[in-house]
Length: 175
Image (cartoon, rainbow, N blue to C red; front, side, top):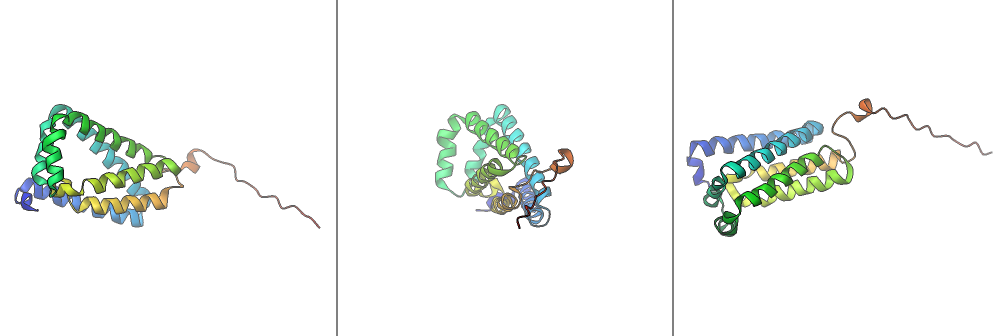
């Protein structure tokens, strides 16, 4: 399962991915707004990286077939996925960008985007070392924490940018 970690490049990437996941988890617990911005940046970067790689070197994604612990995933990668790499990865890149954008909003859209991100992170767990396992599980928990704590808020101090007059409750004096 972890044979790929014999390769120093994979080992360094594995350590970095899991360190980032732990930082995201800590931030989601202590500094949720910072975690939210970190997810925005991470997903935007992942979207750009996947889109450029899909356009310039699509065969690079076939290497994930050797890294997955799931025979089903390996068969899909070497089968239907291999015939349309740019399309599939392009769709993933668009979804990552939409999730990043959703984290810049609040309410229903933030929740839908966060749930999409959590599903995506859980779906790539079987890629094993190729997805930095177990970092994707930790990131899914961190994203859930962000969603739960931040759904009613903008990711920036909106009150300072868009001052809203305070609502004054008038008490009726019935007597």
